[in-house]
Image (cartoon, rainbow, N blue to C red; front, side, top):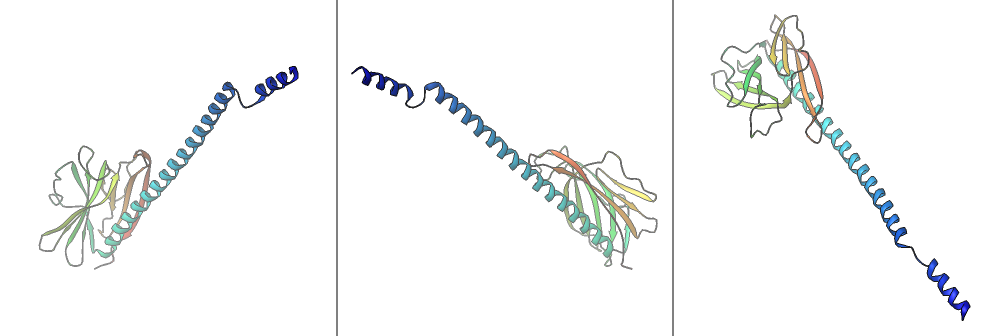
Length: 209
């Protein structure tokens, strides 16, 4: 009888886990889960940041290619004439270049600083607008080409005539048939924070006479 009692006591002491052991195991498991979750979230944010930056660079390069293609189709490049750039409903506008096309229509590119504007769908601080005026002086379109431009720390230098501001500049040669374009885009991460300023430069000439 005495032996049985001792065996029962020994069994009761060695069976299962104590409350302290359970709490310790739960604490360690919680820490491991938290570290794992934090690592997964960091990886997801890094992937989103990379995807956002790649998409932004593609947009800036496509915008530059579009403007370069229009310059090649034009017959003359010039600084926008006084009064040809409209006063925006919000922000300030600065003309950068005007293209005279073979049909004598005019395509003007200008920057609009929207940093102080509210209720805008475009990324601040600056957008590029593309304005088309037909040969009969009728405005046929005035639309945003690209947003989220930002002025660089150092403005580009130009041996000829430099026009533009706030992240978009054009160095127009004296023959009015070639230009070098400078585009500075604000690359943002998934949270909308500026991660870098991405420069795009293109030199092109008119091919129409």
